[in-house]
Image (tube, rainbow, N blue to C red; front, side, top):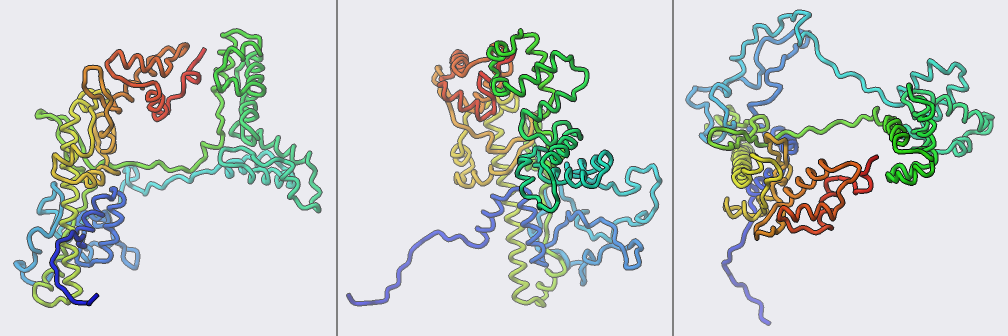
Length: 490
């Protein structure tokens, strides 16, 4: 075969850096977007943010005095006023931006920045977050007050360090005794005494080795409980806790030789107990979701608007733009200027796309906003993509980790998409609406005779929804609704 050189022309799709950035910004959540933006602001000096939360903060001088001047970085650019503004379209300030927001911070009134506040003023002194007390700190404080002997304190502290986050002692006393040095001459009875001291501390049930012991410790210390009821509750948690968890009341009544009223009273006592006494001292922080779009009712129907609080206001730095315009900038600054313009344009395109998709969703789910989840209609990504002239992957990126605030609560945009179930009339029902109906049916059922999955399927069939029992079971488990045996009560 003879080698030769040939020139051919062909067309192919290429992801430009601008398109790659647009796709990446579109799939980011609000938190991830602001983190990405902070990094870009650090790397590109030509890009600045108008809604920086630190812009209006007080500045302290080296001697501790309060600065009465605006920050130096916000000083107006040099040169004639006509040369200052950046090219049109190089700023993204959100729909609520006005011309006054682009002025330098020198126009801000700093006259009362150092004025003293009255003691009654709400912001007279900084509000500091209270120290979070851990379970170990809480128990150690009680030990210092109640346990006097240093040897006993050391053994109680040893057991406290062996507790898990729920307050349980998962390691046996024999294992703890085995890993102690022999020269300490600690007997197993001393560890048992130290454990008894710990189990008398607050919260009730701490130091238990299993769920039965935890509940029993609490039942013994509950006030105002009749002796007969207390004994029956202790017998249940110590000997028949599995039957109680499975709600097998017939076996419990036969084993305890009691009637429904006695068992109901013992059940009420057990429900006052906390099976996880140490969970109240956990340091879990709640995650808060900020909506990207807001839906409100108006005279013309449901109106969709972007949340201005999550929309960053960006612009190109006027001083650097003037330097480049006068030909004083270098090649690197020219590239950074182009990157800043791309970012501003992609940021505007991101929020415009989110708004268009949200409007299309609200248009198709009007019944949901008027009547709730039971009126949700089936919706797939392709339907929104065909309407807006976008690809399904774009709709998937837009609806992932983007949230909508509605009169019915906060929902992810993906919540409004769901598969369909056929109806007897030949129509379709959304799986979300079926889940809402299952919640309504189980919420209104008789606790003494709860509805089985087959009964729920039959009741849905009476409303024209053809659904199998296994599908009902799958939806019920997804909703974290217990099975019929665990929903039964006396």
